[in-house]
Amino acid sequence: MSSSLLLVAAAEAVPTASSSGADLTTIASPTMWLITIAAVIALIVFDFAFTHKPHEPTMKEATWWTVFYIALPCIFGAWLWFEYGSEEGVLFYSGYIVEKALSVDNLFVFIVILAGFAVPRPLRQRVLLWGVAGALVLRGIFIAVGAGLIARFSWVFFIFGLILLLTAIKVVRDAVRGVEEEPDPGQLPVVRLVRRLWPVSDGYVGTHMVVKQAGRRVITPLAVVVAAIMGTDVLFAVDSVPAVFGITHDPYLVFTTNAFALLGLRALYFVLEGSLRTLRYLPYGLGVILIFIAVKLVLHGAHLYAESVPDIEPVPSLIVIAGILAITIAASVWKTKQEERAYAAARAVERAAEAGVELAADSGVEKE
Image (cartoon, rainbow, N blue to C red; front, side, top):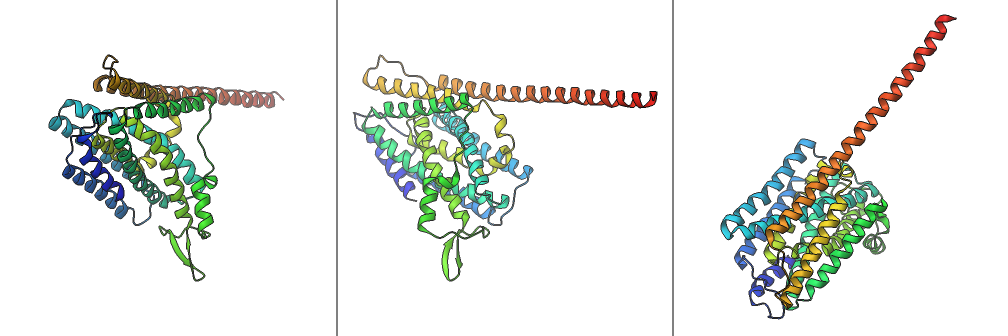
């Protein structure tokens, strides 16, 4: 709730930005902010109510929820387009595509954490939902602080650009080296802190995070997992918020792109869990996109000091981002199919060789 108040306060302060900073005029009034935040909270509460009884969703159920949470931003973006103009619609869709791609990449880490703590599959929905709720609060705080800094200091764009450039270099370097981001969940600082402060029960107790054992209150492993997920949310926010600020400076669009990208991750996890590793080129694509946005941030920051410096417009940005992502996904799917065909061909050769050996053996027996 504190992040919601910060965002509304930031919305009221945005139109009166200092001349030394960037122009952060927003399309949203404080009332529009409150309605949007209330709608996001309502969706989170609805998800919590839906997952109150632990169960592992079927592929059909997860797919339908994923379609629903992708349809929402598509409809919202269309409304922005017709209500506020094509530029606002393009900016929203560009930001949403980037944030959704980053969210999918983050699912790799969530898979490792859930597996590392041996979270029962029926409880994984609840853990992911707590992670989404925590991420929304953290993003809200980061966006409010980021908007305040940008409104006052133009050089913040260069800092954001540097953060994204370093992130992109690490992502691409790890992809080239074949290094996967698989942290040891038990060694995460937030997990070690939680275990040091509170006793932990031996096993999971449904969706409960605090239970009473031997006359004292203890936390369950579920609480430790949630702490681990929220700890990684902080790191993700450091990359995510500057990335979308590189596309639009409207705090309202920054928040809504983040919110829509995070909502639905619970269902998307179960849809993509088995196929995430087939998106082998996603880190390369994300690295290139982050480099592009870093350059865009630096150019915009320089443009504020010297108007002769070019500023990349919204439509070309959307074309570049969507194009890179489409090429990345297409290349990943093509490579996976090529390997599947090669594996099938190799297995066919092996089976033919085995059949030939058996035939020769049978012929030898007949001659004798």
